[in-house]
Image 1 (tube, rainbow over the protein chains, first blue to last red):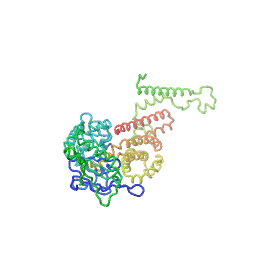
Image 2 (cartoon, helix red, strand yellow):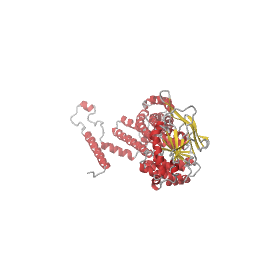
Image 3 (tube, chains in turn yellow, blue):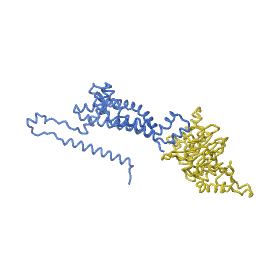
Image 4 (cartoon, rainbow over the protein chains, first blue to last red):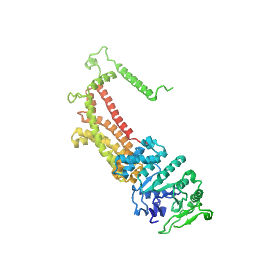
Length: 299
Length: 278
Protein backbone atom coordinates (compact mmCIF):
# COMPACT_ATOMS: atom_id res chain seq x y z
CA UNK A 1 0.00 0.00 0.00
CA UNK A 2 2.89 2.30 0.72
CA UNK A 3 3.82 1.89 -2.93
CA UNK A 4 0.42 2.90 -4.23
CA UNK A 5 0.06 5.85 -6.57
CA UNK A 6 -1.95 7.57 -3.90
CA UNK A 7 -1.44 6.47 -0.35
CA UNK A 8 -3.34 7.70 2.63
CA UNK A 9 -1.38 6.96 5.78
CA UNK A 10 -2.75 7.03 9.31
CA UNK A 11 -5.06 9.92 8.65
CA UNK A 12 -6.74 11.27 11.76
CA UNK A 13 -9.19 14.12 12.06
CA UNK A 14 -10.24 15.55 15.40
CA UNK A 15 -12.26 18.63 16.22
CA UNK A 16 -12.76 20.33 19.57
CA UNK A 17 -16.18 19.23 20.82
CA UNK A 18 -16.98 22.57 22.42
CA UNK A 19 -16.77 21.14 25.95
CA UNK A 20 -13.01 21.22 26.22
CA UNK A 21 -12.64 17.71 24.86
CA UNK A 22 -12.08 16.36 21.41
CA UNK A 23 -14.28 14.74 18.88
CA UNK A 24 -12.61 12.20 16.62
CA UNK A 25 -14.17 11.88 13.19
CA UNK A 26 -11.82 9.12 12.06
CA UNK A 27 -8.55 7.76 13.29
CA UNK A 28 -5.49 6.21 11.60
CA UNK A 29 -7.35 5.65 8.35
CA UNK A 30 -5.03 4.14 5.77
CA UNK A 31 -5.65 3.02 2.23
CA UNK A 32 -4.15 3.24 -1.23
CA UNK A 33 -5.39 3.97 -4.73
CA UNK A 34 -3.63 2.75 -7.86
CA UNK A 35 -3.03 4.79 -10.98
CA UNK A 36 -5.98 4.75 -13.33
CA UNK A 37 -8.31 3.31 -10.71
CA UNK A 38 -11.86 4.50 -10.16
CA UNK A 39 -12.61 4.29 -6.45
CA UNK A 40 -15.88 5.18 -4.79
CA UNK A 41 -16.32 5.71 -1.06
CA UNK A 42 -19.65 4.91 0.57
CA UNK A 43 -20.75 5.70 4.06
CA UNK A 44 -23.39 7.42 6.12
CA UNK A 45 -23.41 11.17 6.66
CA UNK A 46 -21.00 12.28 9.34
CA UNK A 47 -18.46 9.52 8.82
CA UNK A 48 -15.94 11.97 7.42
CA UNK A 49 -16.06 11.18 3.71
CA UNK A 50 -16.09 14.85 2.78
CA UNK A 51 -13.33 15.55 5.27
CA UNK A 52 -11.15 12.91 3.59
CA UNK A 53 -12.01 14.46 0.23
CA UNK A 54 -11.04 17.94 1.40
CA UNK A 55 -7.78 16.64 2.80
CA UNK A 56 -7.01 14.89 -0.51
CA UNK A 57 -7.83 18.12 -2.34
CA UNK A 58 -5.52 20.01 0.00
CA UNK A 59 -8.34 22.31 1.08
CA UNK A 60 -8.01 21.28 4.72
CA UNK A 61 -5.31 19.80 6.89
CA UNK A 62 -5.67 16.54 8.82
CA UNK A 63 -4.97 16.50 12.54
CA UNK A 64 -2.46 13.71 11.94
CA UNK A 65 -1.26 11.57 9.10
CA UNK A 66 -0.10 12.15 5.55
CA UNK A 67 -1.38 11.80 2.03
CA UNK A 68 1.25 10.87 -0.53
CA UNK A 69 0.78 11.09 -4.25
CA UNK A 70 3.51 9.66 -6.48
CA UNK A 71 5.59 9.32 -3.33
CA UNK A 72 5.40 12.98 -2.35
CA UNK A 73 3.40 14.32 0.56
CA UNK A 74 0.44 16.44 -0.45
CA UNK A 75 0.19 19.93 1.00
CA UNK A 76 -2.23 22.58 -0.11
CA UNK A 77 -4.45 22.53 -3.18
CA UNK A 78 -2.91 21.88 -6.57
CA UNK A 79 -3.83 21.56 -10.23
CA UNK A 80 -2.69 17.93 -9.95
CA UNK A 81 -5.80 17.23 -7.93
CA UNK A 82 -8.97 18.38 -9.65
CA UNK A 83 -12.21 18.65 -7.71
CA UNK A 84 -15.85 18.53 -8.77
CA UNK A 85 -18.04 19.74 -5.94
CA UNK A 86 -21.67 18.84 -5.45
CA UNK A 87 -22.91 22.38 -6.08
CA UNK A 88 -21.63 25.82 -6.85
CA UNK A 89 -18.41 24.73 -8.43
CA UNK A 90 -19.19 26.84 -11.50
CA UNK A 91 -18.70 30.57 -11.38
CA UNK A 92 -22.19 31.97 -12.07
CA UNK A 93 -21.02 35.14 -13.81
CA UNK A 94 -19.15 33.19 -16.51
CA UNK A 95 -20.62 31.25 -19.40
CA UNK A 96 -20.22 27.48 -19.53
CA UNK A 97 -17.35 27.85 -21.97
CA UNK A 98 -15.64 30.54 -19.89
CA UNK A 99 -15.90 28.32 -16.84
CA UNK A 100 -13.94 25.64 -18.67
CA UNK A 101 -11.40 28.04 -20.20
CA UNK A 102 -10.91 29.43 -16.67
CA UNK A 103 -9.57 26.01 -15.67
CA UNK A 104 -7.65 25.28 -18.87
CA UNK A 105 -5.94 28.68 -18.84
CA UNK A 106 -4.86 28.06 -15.24
CA UNK A 107 -3.54 24.62 -16.18
CA UNK A 108 -1.70 25.68 -19.33
CA UNK A 109 -0.63 29.27 -18.72
CA UNK A 110 1.58 29.35 -21.83
CA UNK A 111 -1.17 28.49 -24.27
CA UNK A 112 -2.73 30.98 -26.63
CA UNK A 113 -6.34 31.98 -26.21
CA UNK A 114 -7.28 29.91 -29.23
CA UNK A 115 -5.63 26.74 -27.91
CA UNK A 116 -7.35 27.16 -24.57
CA UNK A 117 -10.71 27.64 -26.22
CA UNK A 118 -10.29 24.74 -28.64
CA UNK A 119 -9.48 22.34 -25.83
CA UNK A 120 -12.39 23.64 -23.75
CA UNK A 121 -14.83 23.21 -26.61
CA UNK A 122 -13.51 19.71 -27.26
CA UNK A 123 -14.06 18.63 -23.67
CA UNK A 124 -17.50 20.22 -23.49
CA UNK A 125 -18.33 18.28 -26.61
CA UNK A 126 -17.18 15.05 -24.92
CA UNK A 127 -19.82 15.49 -22.22
CA UNK A 128 -22.45 16.26 -24.84
CA UNK A 129 -22.49 20.06 -24.67
CA UNK A 130 -22.09 22.03 -27.87
CA UNK A 131 -23.60 24.85 -29.88
CA UNK A 132 -25.60 27.49 -28.10
CA UNK A 133 -25.56 25.89 -24.67
CA UNK A 134 -21.86 26.55 -24.05
CA UNK A 135 -22.41 30.29 -24.28
CA UNK A 136 -25.06 30.29 -21.57
CA UNK A 137 -24.56 31.17 -17.94
CA UNK A 138 -24.92 28.37 -15.38
CA UNK A 139 -28.25 29.82 -14.20
CA UNK A 140 -29.63 29.23 -17.69
CA UNK A 141 -28.55 25.58 -17.69
CA UNK A 142 -30.27 22.62 -16.08
CA UNK A 143 -28.67 20.97 -13.06
CA UNK A 144 -27.46 18.11 -15.21
CA UNK A 145 -25.87 20.39 -17.78
CA UNK A 146 -24.13 22.33 -15.03
CA UNK A 147 -22.50 19.18 -13.67
CA UNK A 148 -21.48 18.24 -17.21
CA UNK A 149 -19.65 21.55 -17.43
CA UNK A 150 -17.95 20.85 -14.09
CA UNK A 151 -16.89 17.43 -15.30
CA UNK A 152 -15.61 18.84 -18.59
CA UNK A 153 -13.56 21.42 -16.70
CA UNK A 154 -12.09 18.78 -14.42
CA UNK A 155 -11.18 16.36 -17.22
CA UNK A 156 -9.83 19.11 -19.50
CA UNK A 157 -7.21 19.85 -16.84
CA UNK A 158 -6.00 16.24 -16.78
CA UNK A 159 -5.29 16.23 -13.06
CA UNK A 160 -3.31 13.27 -11.72
CA UNK A 161 -6.16 12.65 -9.35
CA UNK A 162 -9.76 13.62 -9.90
CA UNK A 163 -11.91 14.06 -6.81
CA UNK A 164 -15.68 13.98 -7.17
CA UNK A 165 -17.68 15.05 -4.11
CA UNK A 166 -21.17 13.61 -4.62
CA UNK A 167 -21.28 15.16 -8.08
CA UNK A 168 -24.73 13.85 -8.89
CA UNK A 169 -26.29 14.21 -5.44
CA UNK A 170 -28.53 17.10 -6.42
CA UNK A 171 -29.79 15.60 -9.68
CA UNK A 172 -32.93 13.62 -10.36
CA UNK A 173 -32.53 9.88 -10.97
CA UNK A 174 -32.99 9.95 -14.74
CA UNK A 175 -30.53 12.78 -15.34
CA UNK A 176 -28.11 11.10 -12.97
CA UNK A 177 -28.25 7.95 -15.10
CA UNK A 178 -27.32 9.74 -18.31
CA UNK A 179 -24.53 11.75 -16.73
CA UNK A 180 -23.07 8.64 -15.09
CA UNK A 181 -22.80 7.18 -18.57
CA UNK A 182 -21.24 10.39 -19.91
CA UNK A 183 -18.73 10.24 -17.07
CA UNK A 184 -17.87 6.60 -17.85
CA UNK A 185 -17.45 7.47 -21.52
CA UNK A 186 -15.09 10.36 -20.81
CA UNK A 187 -13.19 8.41 -18.18
CA UNK A 188 -12.73 5.22 -20.21
CA UNK A 189 -10.69 7.08 -22.84
CA UNK A 190 -8.13 8.15 -20.24
CA UNK A 191 -6.00 6.67 -17.48
CA UNK A 192 -7.46 9.17 -15.07
CA UNK A 193 -7.44 8.20 -11.41
CA UNK A 194 -10.77 9.03 -9.81
CA UNK A 195 -11.85 9.14 -6.17
CA UNK A 196 -15.55 9.74 -5.72
CA UNK A 197 -17.93 10.17 -2.82
CA UNK A 198 -21.43 8.91 -3.34
CA UNK A 199 -24.53 7.86 -1.42
CA UNK A 200 -25.87 5.82 -4.28
CA UNK A 201 -25.01 2.10 -4.22
CA UNK A 202 -25.99 1.45 -7.83
CA UNK A 203 -23.99 4.42 -9.00
CA UNK A 204 -20.94 3.13 -7.16
CA UNK A 205 -21.26 -0.36 -8.67
CA UNK A 206 -21.68 1.04 -12.16
CA UNK A 207 -18.68 3.35 -11.95
CA UNK A 208 -16.11 1.93 -9.59
CA UNK A 209 -13.29 -0.57 -9.77
CA UNK A 210 -13.34 -0.66 -6.01
CA UNK A 211 -15.71 0.61 -3.33
CA UNK A 212 -14.41 1.69 0.05
CA UNK A 213 -16.93 1.26 2.85
CA UNK A 214 -16.85 3.47 5.91
CA UNK A 215 -18.37 2.73 9.28
CA UNK A 216 -20.44 5.36 11.04
CA UNK A 217 -18.79 8.24 12.81
CA UNK A 218 -17.51 9.33 15.22
CA UNK A 219 -14.38 7.17 15.22
CA UNK A 220 -15.24 6.05 11.73
CA UNK A 221 -12.94 3.79 9.80
CA UNK A 222 -12.57 2.58 6.26
CA UNK A 223 -13.59 -0.98 7.02
CA UNK A 224 -13.77 -2.73 3.69
CA UNK A 225 -12.59 -2.42 0.15
CA UNK A 226 -15.01 -4.23 -2.13
CA UNK A 227 -13.81 -5.12 -5.61
CA UNK A 228 -16.37 -4.79 -8.34
CA UNK A 229 -15.96 -7.98 -10.28
CA UNK A 230 -18.04 -6.91 -13.24
CA UNK A 231 -16.13 -6.45 -16.50
CA UNK A 232 -16.04 -3.15 -18.36
CA UNK A 233 -17.40 -1.59 -20.44
CA UNK A 234 -20.42 -1.51 -18.21
CA UNK A 235 -23.89 -0.47 -19.29
CA UNK A 236 -26.55 0.14 -16.67
CA UNK A 237 -29.11 -2.16 -18.27
CA UNK A 238 -26.62 -4.99 -18.79
CA UNK A 239 -24.80 -5.09 -15.49
CA UNK A 240 -27.96 -5.85 -13.54
CA UNK A 241 -28.04 -9.16 -15.41
CA UNK A 242 -24.51 -10.01 -14.30
CA UNK A 243 -24.42 -12.75 -11.66
CA UNK A 244 -22.15 -10.69 -9.42
CA UNK A 245 -24.32 -7.59 -9.44
CA UNK A 246 -26.84 -8.51 -6.77
CA UNK A 247 -24.29 -10.39 -4.71
CA UNK A 248 -22.19 -7.25 -4.48
CA UNK A 249 -25.20 -5.03 -4.05
CA UNK A 250 -26.53 -7.17 -1.19
CA UNK A 251 -23.17 -7.08 0.49
CA UNK A 252 -23.10 -3.28 0.29
CA UNK A 253 -26.67 -2.93 1.52
CA UNK A 254 -25.97 -5.23 4.44
CA UNK A 255 -22.88 -3.25 5.35
CA UNK A 256 -24.54 0.15 5.20
CA UNK A 257 -27.72 -1.09 6.83
CA UNK A 258 -26.26 -3.08 9.71
CA UNK A 259 -22.54 -3.56 9.96
CA UNK A 260 -21.58 0.09 9.53
CA UNK A 261 -23.30 0.75 12.85
CA UNK A 262 -22.04 -2.41 14.58
CA UNK A 263 -18.42 -1.67 13.68
CA UNK A 264 -18.64 1.99 14.65
CA UNK A 265 -17.09 3.73 17.58
CA UNK A 266 -14.18 1.41 18.35
CA UNK A 267 -11.30 3.25 19.93
CA UNK A 268 -8.04 2.10 18.44
CA UNK A 269 -4.85 1.30 20.23
CA UNK A 270 -2.00 3.76 19.99
CA UNK A 271 -0.31 3.68 16.59
CA UNK A 272 -2.68 1.08 15.21
CA UNK A 273 -3.31 1.32 11.49
CA UNK A 274 -6.77 0.81 10.06
CA UNK A 275 -6.53 -0.63 6.62
CA UNK A 276 -9.65 -1.81 4.89
CA UNK A 277 -10.23 -5.53 4.42
CA UNK A 278 -10.33 -6.51 0.77
CA UNK A 279 -13.55 -8.23 -0.17
CA UNK A 280 -13.91 -10.00 -3.47
CA UNK A 281 -17.25 -11.42 -4.49
CA UNK A 282 -17.23 -13.45 -7.68
CA UNK A 283 -19.93 -15.93 -8.60
CA UNK A 284 -18.79 -16.42 -12.17
CA UNK A 285 -16.09 -18.97 -11.38
CA UNK A 286 -18.47 -21.91 -11.18
CA UNK A 287 -20.50 -23.50 -8.45
CA UNK A 288 -17.43 -24.93 -6.73
CA UNK A 289 -16.17 -21.48 -5.88
CA UNK A 290 -19.50 -20.20 -4.80
CA UNK A 291 -18.94 -21.25 -1.18
CA UNK A 292 -17.85 -19.27 0.63
CA UNK A 293 -19.50 -16.44 -1.15
CA UNK A 294 -17.56 -13.89 0.74
CA UNK A 295 -13.83 -14.21 0.74
CA UNK A 296 -12.16 -11.93 3.12
CA UNK A 297 -8.50 -11.40 2.44
CA UNK A 298 -6.50 -9.44 4.91
CA UNK A 299 -3.96 -7.34 3.11
CA UNK B 1 -59.58 43.55 -20.27
CA UNK B 2 -55.92 44.48 -20.38
CA UNK B 3 -55.88 46.35 -23.65
CA UNK B 4 -52.72 48.21 -22.75
CA UNK B 5 -49.54 46.82 -21.27
CA UNK B 6 -48.72 47.54 -17.64
CA UNK B 7 -45.98 50.00 -18.66
CA UNK B 8 -48.31 51.96 -20.91
CA UNK B 9 -50.98 52.21 -18.24
CA UNK B 10 -48.36 53.38 -15.74
CA UNK B 11 -47.14 56.00 -18.22
CA UNK B 12 -50.66 57.32 -18.74
CA UNK B 13 -51.09 57.62 -14.97
CA UNK B 14 -47.77 59.46 -14.65
CA UNK B 15 -48.69 61.98 -17.34
CA UNK B 16 -52.16 62.47 -15.85
CA UNK B 17 -50.68 63.11 -12.39
CA UNK B 18 -48.20 65.60 -13.86
CA UNK B 19 -50.90 67.54 -15.70
CA UNK B 20 -53.22 67.62 -12.68
CA UNK B 21 -50.35 68.69 -10.41
CA UNK B 22 -49.28 71.50 -12.73
CA UNK B 23 -52.85 72.70 -13.16
CA UNK B 24 -53.46 72.83 -9.40
CA UNK B 25 -50.19 74.72 -8.95
CA UNK B 26 -50.98 77.19 -11.77
CA UNK B 27 -54.51 77.88 -10.52
CA UNK B 28 -53.60 78.24 -6.86
CA UNK B 29 -51.10 80.93 -7.81
CA UNK B 30 -53.35 83.00 -10.08
CA UNK B 31 -55.85 82.98 -7.20
CA UNK B 32 -53.44 85.17 -5.20
CA UNK B 33 -54.96 88.30 -6.64
CA UNK B 34 -53.22 91.59 -6.24
CA UNK B 35 -55.06 94.05 -4.04
CA UNK B 36 -56.49 96.65 -6.46
CA UNK B 37 -59.01 98.33 -4.23
CA UNK B 38 -58.76 101.77 -2.59
CA UNK B 39 -55.50 102.04 -0.67
CA UNK B 40 -54.66 104.06 2.35
CA UNK B 41 -51.59 106.22 2.41
CA UNK B 42 -49.96 103.76 4.78
CA UNK B 43 -50.60 100.87 2.41
CA UNK B 44 -49.13 102.84 -0.48
CA UNK B 45 -46.08 103.60 1.63
CA UNK B 46 -45.50 99.90 2.46
CA UNK B 47 -45.78 98.99 -1.21
CA UNK B 48 -49.11 97.21 -1.19
CA UNK B 49 -49.81 98.42 -4.71
CA UNK B 50 -46.88 96.46 -6.16
CA UNK B 51 -47.04 92.76 -6.78
CA UNK B 52 -45.69 90.70 -3.89
CA UNK B 53 -42.84 88.36 -4.55
CA UNK B 54 -44.80 85.11 -4.68
CA UNK B 55 -44.23 81.54 -5.68
CA UNK B 56 -44.14 81.60 -9.47
CA UNK B 57 -46.58 79.52 -11.50
CA UNK B 58 -45.25 76.54 -13.51
CA UNK B 59 -45.64 78.44 -16.76
CA UNK B 60 -43.06 80.98 -15.59
CA UNK B 61 -40.72 78.19 -14.47
CA UNK B 62 -41.10 76.60 -17.90
CA UNK B 63 -40.21 79.84 -19.63
CA UNK B 64 -37.20 80.24 -17.34
CA UNK B 65 -36.15 76.66 -18.02
CA UNK B 66 -36.36 77.26 -21.75
CA UNK B 67 -34.21 80.38 -21.48
CA UNK B 68 -31.60 78.73 -19.29
CA UNK B 69 -31.43 75.47 -21.20
CA UNK B 70 -31.23 77.11 -24.61
CA UNK B 71 -27.99 78.80 -23.52
CA UNK B 72 -26.60 76.76 -20.63
CA UNK B 73 -22.91 77.62 -20.90
CA UNK B 74 -22.78 81.42 -20.95
CA UNK B 75 -20.44 83.10 -18.52
CA UNK B 76 -21.17 86.74 -17.69
CA UNK B 77 -19.07 87.17 -14.56
CA UNK B 78 -18.90 85.47 -11.16
CA UNK B 79 -22.58 85.88 -10.31
CA UNK B 80 -24.05 85.15 -13.71
CA UNK B 81 -23.13 81.84 -15.19
CA UNK B 82 -25.23 79.41 -17.23
CA UNK B 83 -26.89 76.48 -15.49
CA UNK B 84 -24.70 74.06 -17.48
CA UNK B 85 -21.54 75.60 -16.05
CA UNK B 86 -22.92 75.52 -12.51
CA UNK B 87 -23.97 71.88 -12.80
CA UNK B 88 -20.64 71.09 -14.44
CA UNK B 89 -18.77 72.43 -11.41
CA UNK B 90 -20.94 70.38 -9.07
CA UNK B 91 -20.49 67.20 -11.07
CA UNK B 92 -16.74 67.75 -11.25
CA UNK B 93 -16.56 68.11 -7.44
CA UNK B 94 -18.80 65.14 -6.82
CA UNK B 95 -16.90 62.86 -9.17
CA UNK B 96 -13.47 63.92 -7.92
CA UNK B 97 -14.38 63.35 -4.27
CA UNK B 98 -16.28 60.22 -5.15
CA UNK B 99 -13.48 58.55 -7.12
CA UNK B 100 -10.90 59.46 -4.51
CA UNK B 101 -13.19 57.73 -2.00
CA UNK B 102 -13.58 54.70 -4.28
CA UNK B 103 -9.81 54.35 -4.69
CA UNK B 104 -9.48 54.05 -0.93
CA UNK B 105 -12.76 52.41 0.04
CA UNK B 106 -12.71 49.48 -2.38
CA UNK B 107 -9.20 48.13 -1.63
CA UNK B 108 -9.69 48.78 2.08
CA UNK B 109 -13.07 47.07 1.91
CA UNK B 110 -11.37 44.06 0.30
CA UNK B 111 -8.90 43.92 3.17
CA UNK B 112 -11.61 44.22 5.81
CA UNK B 113 -13.74 41.64 4.04
CA UNK B 114 -10.95 39.12 3.76
CA UNK B 115 -9.43 39.48 7.21
CA UNK B 116 -11.56 39.37 10.30
CA UNK B 117 -8.69 40.85 12.31
CA UNK B 118 -8.63 43.91 10.05
CA UNK B 119 -12.41 44.11 10.34
CA UNK B 120 -12.38 44.03 14.13
CA UNK B 121 -9.48 46.48 14.32
CA UNK B 122 -11.04 49.07 12.02
CA UNK B 123 -14.68 48.63 12.95
CA UNK B 124 -14.69 50.98 16.00
CA UNK B 125 -13.26 53.81 13.89
CA UNK B 126 -15.73 53.22 11.09
CA UNK B 127 -18.65 53.15 13.49
CA UNK B 128 -17.66 56.47 15.07
CA UNK B 129 -16.78 58.27 11.83
CA UNK B 130 -19.68 57.01 9.75
CA UNK B 131 -22.59 58.79 11.50
CA UNK B 132 -20.85 62.19 11.37
CA UNK B 133 -22.70 64.59 9.12
CA UNK B 134 -20.32 65.38 6.26
CA UNK B 135 -20.90 69.12 6.73
CA UNK B 136 -19.58 68.88 10.27
CA UNK B 137 -16.15 68.28 8.71
CA UNK B 138 -16.37 71.52 6.75
CA UNK B 139 -14.83 73.95 9.30
CA UNK B 140 -11.98 71.58 10.00
CA UNK B 141 -11.45 70.98 6.28
CA UNK B 142 -11.46 74.70 5.54
CA UNK B 143 -8.95 75.35 8.31
CA UNK B 144 -6.58 72.53 7.38
CA UNK B 145 -6.85 72.61 3.60
CA UNK B 146 -7.22 76.40 3.37
CA UNK B 147 -9.06 76.08 0.08
CA UNK B 148 -12.81 76.12 -0.32
CA UNK B 149 -12.80 74.11 -3.53
CA UNK B 150 -10.68 71.31 -2.06
CA UNK B 151 -12.74 71.40 1.13
CA UNK B 152 -15.93 70.76 -0.82
CA UNK B 153 -14.25 67.83 -2.53
CA UNK B 154 -13.08 66.54 0.83
CA UNK B 155 -16.62 66.67 2.18
CA UNK B 156 -17.80 64.61 -0.79
CA UNK B 157 -14.93 62.21 -0.23
CA UNK B 158 -15.76 61.68 3.44
CA UNK B 159 -19.47 61.17 2.86
CA UNK B 160 -19.15 58.75 -0.05
CA UNK B 161 -16.48 56.55 1.47
CA UNK B 162 -18.62 54.73 4.06
CA UNK B 163 -21.27 52.97 1.97
CA UNK B 164 -18.61 51.84 -0.50
CA UNK B 165 -16.29 50.64 2.27
CA UNK B 166 -18.95 48.72 4.18
CA UNK B 167 -20.59 47.20 1.10
CA UNK B 168 -17.26 46.08 -0.33
CA UNK B 169 -16.32 44.48 2.98
CA UNK B 170 -19.73 42.83 3.25
CA UNK B 171 -19.64 41.60 -0.35
CA UNK B 172 -16.12 40.24 -0.11
CA UNK B 173 -16.78 38.51 3.21
CA UNK B 174 -19.88 36.90 1.75
CA UNK B 175 -18.23 35.30 -1.28
CA UNK B 176 -19.19 31.64 -1.34
CA UNK B 177 -16.40 29.47 -0.05
CA UNK B 178 -16.91 26.98 -2.89
CA UNK B 179 -15.92 29.65 -5.43
CA UNK B 180 -12.79 30.50 -3.48
CA UNK B 181 -12.05 26.77 -3.35
CA UNK B 182 -12.38 26.61 -7.13
CA UNK B 183 -9.69 29.29 -7.32
CA UNK B 184 -7.55 27.43 -4.78
CA UNK B 185 -7.75 24.11 -6.61
CA UNK B 186 -6.71 25.93 -9.78
CA UNK B 187 -3.65 27.31 -7.99
CA UNK B 188 -4.58 30.92 -8.58
CA UNK B 189 -2.46 33.42 -6.68
CA UNK B 190 -3.91 35.93 -4.24
CA UNK B 191 -4.18 38.72 -6.82
CA UNK B 192 -5.61 36.51 -9.54
CA UNK B 193 -8.15 35.13 -7.06
CA UNK B 194 -9.09 38.65 -5.98
CA UNK B 195 -9.64 39.83 -9.55
CA UNK B 196 -11.10 36.77 -11.24
CA UNK B 197 -13.20 35.29 -8.43
CA UNK B 198 -13.74 37.58 -5.44
CA UNK B 199 -14.26 40.80 -7.39
CA UNK B 200 -16.90 39.46 -9.82
CA UNK B 201 -18.58 37.55 -7.00
CA UNK B 202 -18.78 40.63 -4.77
CA UNK B 203 -19.38 43.10 -7.62
CA UNK B 204 -23.18 43.36 -7.23
CA UNK B 205 -22.81 44.26 -3.54
CA UNK B 206 -19.93 46.65 -4.23
CA UNK B 207 -21.83 48.44 -6.99
CA UNK B 208 -24.86 48.75 -4.70
CA UNK B 209 -22.59 50.55 -2.24
CA UNK B 210 -21.26 52.77 -5.03
CA UNK B 211 -24.79 53.62 -6.06
CA UNK B 212 -25.76 54.58 -2.50
CA UNK B 213 -22.58 56.67 -2.26
CA UNK B 214 -23.16 58.65 -5.44
CA UNK B 215 -26.68 59.42 -4.23
CA UNK B 216 -25.39 60.70 -0.90
CA UNK B 217 -22.60 62.66 -2.60
CA UNK B 218 -25.12 64.46 -4.81
CA UNK B 219 -27.26 65.29 -1.77
CA UNK B 220 -24.28 66.67 0.11
CA UNK B 221 -22.73 68.74 -2.71
CA UNK B 222 -25.72 71.13 -2.75
CA UNK B 223 -25.34 71.88 0.94
CA UNK B 224 -21.55 72.07 0.71
CA UNK B 225 -21.69 74.55 -2.17
CA UNK B 226 -24.17 76.72 -0.28
CA UNK B 227 -21.47 77.00 2.37
CA UNK B 228 -18.34 77.43 0.25
CA UNK B 229 -19.96 79.54 -2.47
CA UNK B 230 -18.47 80.72 -5.73
CA UNK B 231 -19.71 78.15 -8.20
CA UNK B 232 -21.87 75.07 -8.40
CA UNK B 233 -25.54 74.30 -8.38
CA UNK B 234 -25.79 74.62 -4.59
CA UNK B 235 -24.31 78.11 -4.75
CA UNK B 236 -26.66 78.92 -7.62
CA UNK B 237 -29.74 77.97 -5.56
CA UNK B 238 -28.56 80.08 -2.64
CA UNK B 239 -27.61 83.00 -4.86
CA UNK B 240 -31.00 83.04 -6.55
CA UNK B 241 -32.65 82.90 -3.11
CA UNK B 242 -30.68 86.00 -2.18
CA UNK B 243 -31.88 87.57 -5.42
CA UNK B 244 -35.39 86.50 -4.46
CA UNK B 245 -35.67 84.93 -7.88
CA UNK B 246 -37.90 82.00 -6.94
CA UNK B 247 -38.40 80.99 -10.55
CA UNK B 248 -34.70 80.26 -10.80
CA UNK B 249 -34.76 78.51 -7.41
CA UNK B 250 -37.52 76.18 -8.51
CA UNK B 251 -35.84 75.59 -11.85
CA UNK B 252 -32.52 74.70 -10.21
CA UNK B 253 -34.25 72.41 -7.71
CA UNK B 254 -35.68 70.52 -10.66
CA UNK B 255 -32.27 70.38 -12.32
CA UNK B 256 -30.74 68.94 -9.12
CA UNK B 257 -33.36 66.21 -9.23
CA UNK B 258 -32.76 65.44 -12.90
CA UNK B 259 -28.97 65.23 -12.55
CA UNK B 260 -29.32 63.06 -9.44
CA UNK B 261 -31.62 60.76 -11.34
CA UNK B 262 -29.15 60.47 -14.23
CA UNK B 263 -26.25 59.69 -11.90
CA UNK B 264 -28.32 57.01 -10.21
CA UNK B 265 -29.41 55.58 -13.56
CA UNK B 266 -25.79 55.29 -14.70
CA UNK B 267 -25.02 53.17 -11.64
CA UNK B 268 -28.22 51.23 -12.14
CA UNK B 269 -26.92 50.32 -15.58
CA UNK B 270 -23.59 49.25 -14.11
CA UNK B 271 -25.44 47.23 -11.48
CA UNK B 272 -27.31 45.31 -14.15
CA UNK B 273 -24.08 44.60 -15.98
CA UNK B 274 -22.36 43.00 -12.99
CA UNK B 275 -25.41 41.16 -11.70
CA UNK B 276 -25.51 37.38 -11.89
CA UNK B 277 -27.98 34.70 -10.91
CA UNK B 278 -26.74 31.88 -8.73
